[in-house]
Image (cartoon, rainbow, N blue to C red; front, side):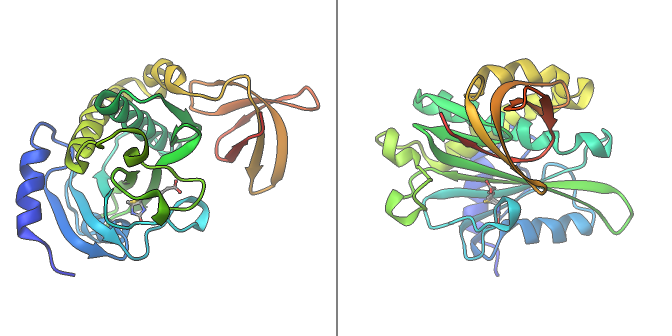
Length: 260
Ligand code: BTN
């Protein structure tokens, strides 16, 4: 796993408008950018540093799933060192999903919708996946690695059936570097708002870009599966669902499938 100096130079120029994404350690291929970002964070690497791979051979998604990572996508992991409480840290995945949705919309004009907690969909197909993993470094400081995967120029034939790609909707798709730069720009702004005022400050924007409310969904948690109607997102980033029994429940972590 050798760093690619030429790629790092190109990324340096592409990402120079933001503090997030610098420095960016870039590789042609990695098993997963998450692992390298954790190693760097463990050793004390500063907030904003990022790891980029052109391809991943063992890209990972939420709930132990695989993340298909052929050439043509954005695969990056960002190190953050938030000062907010540990219970609020999972909200960063929602904040990042919002940043990615805004970035894609800015660059393509395509209709994007966030499927809580942080999938970005175009025409019902998932084009962005976000993975947030927190841990403690060797000095005992908490950090978060935010993994961002975006199918930009990826041929859909190389992706799972439920996935989409910007190459499908926007012809030609924007460059991967411009997608990453726009995403990090939005994230820098949103992360700043979240850092000062918490998720409550980001919630109205998140709600505006969510494509879920009033829909019948299947909610799967570690405890099992329930069905209900999505109502809202609360100020802690939890999804409020009216269950078939009439009870309203707030979910902190779950997988959502739209039924209607
Ligand atoms: C999901 O929706 O399940 C999350 C997918 C996260 C994928 C990204 S790609 C960059 C980073 N490296 C990984 O191995 N995973 C994340």
